[in-house]
Amino acid sequence: MSIIPQPLTQFPWRVLALLLAIAGFGTLVLYSSAGGSIFPWAANQAVRFCIFTVMALVLSRIPVEVFARYTFPAYGAILVALVLVELIGGVRGGSQRWINLGFMQLQPSEFMKPVIVLTVARFYALLPVGEIRRWNAIWPALVLIGLPWALVLVIPVALGAYVHARLSVKHSAYSLAPWGLVFKSGWFNRTLKLVRYGKIQTVSKVESPFDRRNGMAAVRIDTAGGEMQGHTIEIPYLDTAVAGAPAEGSI
View (cartoon, rainbow, N blue to C red):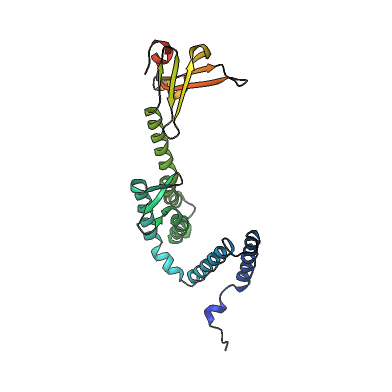
């Protein structure tokens, strides 16, 4: 009878030894990069490796039935959290992906990554073998994958583009002064440009397919500058009539 507990003998010790060697080599590289000091990188790397290795070993001892039982509830809970991110989420690093819980910042999209794999696997585990190749076995999985994808990527990108367009229009304006053109643009980084009439070389009306569909156009003004190709100012989102005769009025 072995003195080593049976659960310990079931761990893949060869794989763990290889993983330990790789992590140890990485820690030594960080130790050397810090000039022979374990701070600030090597110590943090070693602590993280130990914590997450223990977590992985603990998870490996949890019966598969437990994961199967809580997969769908976990998927639903994280999906609700992703909806809350769109409603009350905070912005960090230029993206709205965080929920402020007071004591920590929660990012539900990171939890959805492993849960969505378990959810799809659980769905196919419940299907009879003969149903796996049919359409009824494909579209539910696509829905399970598509809902988080839409909440994490599509909706934030579309909403961000909409907000950016509205703010850009709100903070853009031009005026024709007696001596020249004044144009301001930008809502985050704001720009004010002053151009004398004598510096203007060409004025052209530009219409994209989107502009033509919505009765808009842009005025592109090429000016003489110190650079080889001069300088260009483009005034977007103008009414077609205004863009056709920019010298007749101001907005």
